[in-house]
Amino acid sequence: IGPTACLPGFLRPETAQGIFVNFKRLLEFNNNRMPFAATQIGFSFRNEISPRSGLLRCREFLMAEIEHFIHPAKKFHPKFKNVANIALKLFSASDQLNNLTPCITTLQTAVDKQIIANNVLAYYIGRVYLFLQKIGIDLERVRFRQHLPQEMAHYACDCWDCEIHAYHGWVECVGFADRACYDLSQHSKESGSKLVAYEQLLKPDVIQTHEIILDKAAIGKQFGSDSKQIFSHLESLSNEQAIELETNLKNNNEFHITVDGKIFTIINQMVKKVTFSKKEVFVKEYFPHVIEPSFGIGRILYSLLAHSCMVREQDEQRIWFKFDPIVAPTTCVVLPLSNKEEFQPYIQSIVEKLARHNISYKVDDLNASIGKRYARGDELGTPFAITVDFDTLTSDPATVTLRERNTTEQIRLQVQDIAQVIKDLIDQNHKWMEIVEKYKLFKGQVSS
Image (cartoon, rainbow, N blue to C red; front, side, top):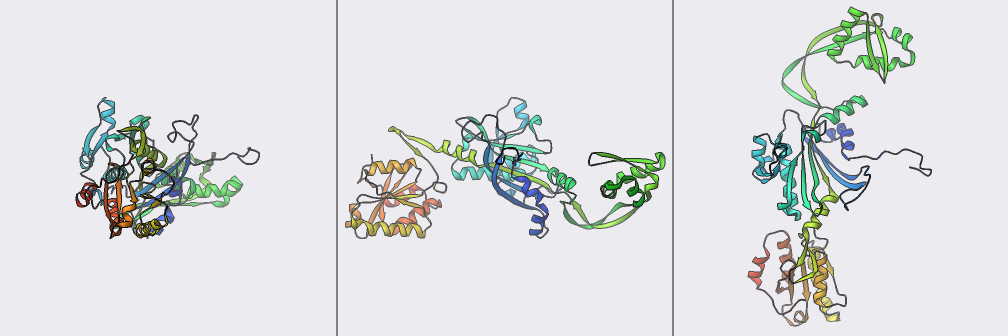
């Protein structure tokens, strides 16, 4: 990179490490309480030799990740009961190895049978399933596949992929991993900063401690500028390593250590004394384990587009998107039949009501037939269309038609009710068929 393209650059393969290196600060923000979770969204990069398949194989892509930090002995989620009875398609590693098909199992059963390692992992699988359902993914084309032993990451206890079937077959869109404490322990080891949490003990633990008293003058004379690193290394030895040091010095009069790739020999004269003692501790430190759901945003959007793309039965040339109102780019389109001045007060009244109810809208008053404008809204996945026609001008109180995209059915209702009816449909307080029963179908206009 750079103006001469001579400087090496390193791009992150995931967003997670930014959370891990900031663990200490994040724990402080949470008042040093466990468990807690942190999320991050951003671009990641992979060295794809041959980018292909649209949004599926890119060198640069958008990821969203959750890092849920928990006690290694307390891998349970208090809200798991909310998703425990969800039945979904699980493709376990054993089923794959035995050439079986995915089976439909509840998350509670999967945890009880240890198909899924713990209920925190299962909780996030359940939440992702509900998320995909809410945005409009076809759940018949969703499965959760467990990693086979040979594809499991070396640091992971259990890994699952949420795979969605689309034009390119089964595509991994969300990954779930129990990463154990690998990341925090490795960052702690390399940085020398403890990325640990603390647990208050009801009964004190008795632990063995040690103290190594060094002859720093002798070490400094022998090793010179490397002495500082040697001091740090010897002072950070574990109890087992301290015992090994004492034993080797007594029996062999030397002990070998490796610091920054260099091997140094410590002799008896450099260590004055190694003492061991026991003490009671009321606070225990530990490396938290991490449960990580990782979302490929581009792949989820690709799957949503693939699952939402429809063709009208009566006209194969008319393609439309079956977006749920919560993900549709525009919720409602307002269509005046004419650009005459007397239509403007009604249009203004409608858009003000839509805005007050936080309903996104667009006014399409271009010079085209109403049928073409309906089709244009359908192609954009707009769920509802409000038509301001000549009956609006003459009726008292003023009325308009509301068209539902999926069925192309229309009802006629008062302008003052239009925003609330759409809001109820968006919030799923009412279904379209219930609205039709109340207001009756309107057949005064024929759409092309």
